[in-house]
Image (cartoon, rainbow, N blue to C red; front, side, top):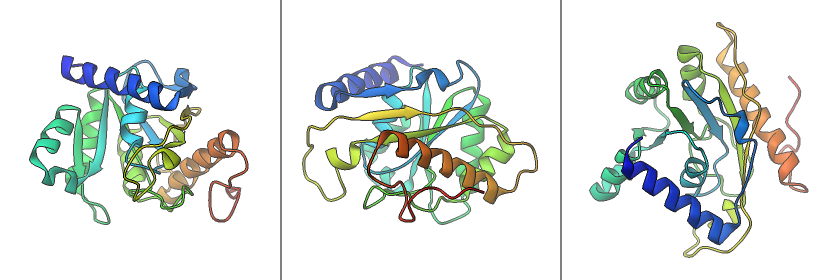
Length: 213
């Protein structure tokens, strides 16, 4: 872990504590070593720094490619182990980068939905996560964030002071040969269950509870 990464991570964590009284639940569910995937719901631009700053291990982040259009910002997030992915395509370079991150023993933080939810409810996942799981055999930690959708919703121009929660669920592994649809369904159901537990009164999806499969 570089000094730059550590300083930015610690500063972000302190900022979130100051403005959001951040509560972290289940950090012990993250394996202490080896490659691991943290798969989280996506409701705000705040999600990547919120999740990453509350993981004590070094993380890497899969981020949409257009963030690198601003060269300065792209250089900064690259030093924080972010790498680009082209959404809605079979981005082989991004898949290779993700597998390299896991082979190095880092925590790969990604958002299966691919883009922010406009209403805080879970969307259908992109297929790339299932491919990474199949090729890496890494454990997946389902994760839910609660509060960023209120603190900085899409279109907002300033932050609101609201409590934030980051909830890490029980790691899940899949047997070789598990169909991709099954992998995606299980992971999204795990995230939905965390939202049901920690965001009471709001269904995680437009259909309500996750279906039993």
